[in-house]
Length: 576
Image (tube, rainbow, N blue to C red):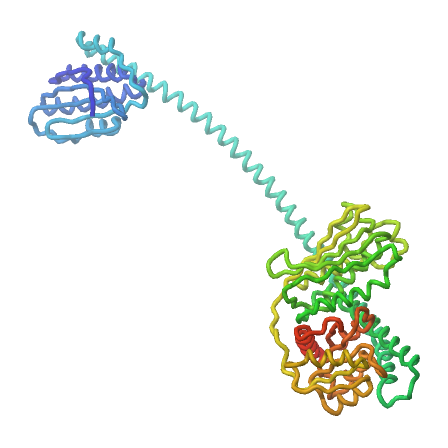
């Protein structure tokens, strides 16, 4: 610690105490302490000096300046060996007024910190060293002046405190008034919120009642429509069943058309019922492995007849290698059919393109329908997913629909855990993308097949099917027409039936209908083998719990997948 001695004073009697007080104030001023701290130093030295004089202790006072990182004024009071206790009023005053007080047997050090850069008044110090102290009367006058200044400061601070108290009281009154006003407003707001909640509850109840009424209406309509449609389907099945009156080929063809049309209408009615279930949140997906090639074949067959003219082409790109998709096939078909139907309605020229690809995320499949139609304005794109909303345009006049298609499709996509998005530009076209999770295939391999029945008039096709069944079926029974297939099924009770869609005497859908009416055969897995344009056969097959197999892609892998799909679908159909 580096210190500089500023002044040295001996203290022996009361006159020296007056001088110590005077010099303490003057030295404090010389090192730059303000008036209040000058008084504190002087008072502390005066009280300690009196204590030492009373105890008759000869003392030397040395004023030093510490110039290190923490500058301070140090006053060292040293005495000859004496019994100084360091207790008493004077010592207590010094401890309160000074920053530090360090006591030893030979003296005491009083410290007052200087909280700024020290600029020592050397002239004042030189004058203090060269001159004797003033009289006691001079010091008394100085003390009186200090006391007056202190009293004036106290009076000014008291007045300022009174003023602040008055302002605080006025502020408190304002705060109390504001609090009361806010409380009243909050009370009124709370009453309004309570009334609003009551109104919202009432409106919510009305909406729930309206939704329930709408669902009941749709359900009742669906029920009333299904009864006559089921009668038509049942009658056509009876006409086609073995043992019925013989029919010409044309008559049988017409009956098959009636059966397929009735099955199509029944599926549409079921869609209406599913819409009501989706609205109420009670529609649950029935997941199973999906054969995407047949889903796309079914979509192609149902969309092509809807094309306006030869100016519009339907382009279905080849399916790349995709991860197995496990989802609700019915919901998937309905979503894509709605999207494709919209593309057909609003495309005059160009093409409608359908693609399927993996991604964009891990374990996802993305279906995209792109058209070169009239497009949708940006301000209308967010509304097309609203119920009953139809974008005003020239083609809307001649297009049938209720405005439920995209809304229903998006709800189905969300139920399946996916998303349906749209982007469009007027005059350029529209792109609608469906992204679905691939799901988990809980039954990757088909159950063992002891006996499989093949029925089709094409011997070459039967040979392909027989070869594809190698390793999958222990025994294979064949026939070349649908009627004998029904008889063989009753005789052998097979574990699998492979039916050609256009089998002679009874078509594949007709045989499927008969099997589903038989208590012993209704749970038999059935695979319908068809070409590129199955028409209503695909819808009938799905509605009656059968799988589809394309006759152009018969192989052990596709056969295994078709058998697995047929087994899963048959189990679900049996449980209904």
